[in-house]
Length: 319
Image 1: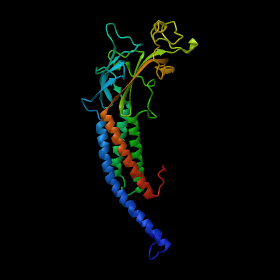
Image 2: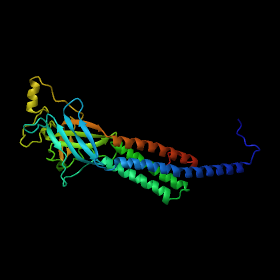
Image 3: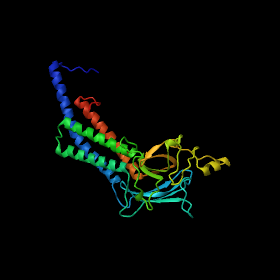
Image 4: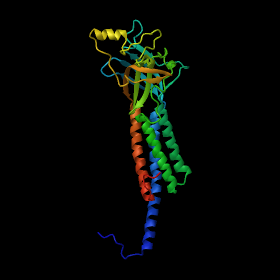
């Protein structure tokens, strides 16, 4: 099929006609984006509602796979952990006399520090920022100014991506477990000095890592871990305690190693090694729904952004 214009028109007039067509197309697209923004606002409000602090919260079961190392639960209200009990059975954390496990209980005292999932705080802040961007774009800006709308759509896209990344886990600004230890008084009784309790979000699930720690002294000549316990003056150059070496000599197995067994960390100003580590992941339906919605919103905004860039004659990679 021929694409020639008949009767032929002058090149200058053809350029004017093309520009007029693009202008009409841009005007139509800018008008349709107002409806898109309203739809995006509804989706963002649903995400904000899923992350809002609503009683009674979400109670999540915690259980280590194929072992009795960790059992318990936590209750999340928004970004805060308001209740929780964890039973630990770790070789390096002997239970109190008469007990079969070591219990960690989140304090419910009004004066106790709060356990907070910072990633959820970040995600909710970014979602609220997205809602502000939508309102500013629809009500306070020039809806016919393509450059203004393009900048707002780009900002919206970036914020949604960051909010989704916060729920996905391990973003650039997220602190490692040894950089952000929890306050011992968030537990009742207080968390032992040689125990690290670290909560985070990974793939829209709540991830708990409990570690038992021991000091590492490079001046022993072997960088061998020593005990946190006062009075333990004799280093174990094999990396095992006397009891563990005796057990090994009598035919028992060596302690199971984990991915951090040979690393040294700075924790609360001390060089430490991780003696035992248990990792438990608990799926959170509200977080999963929020991340799925953010993914859908991200795709919709990306399509709108690309369509606007094409009509404006911009490269989608331009800032």
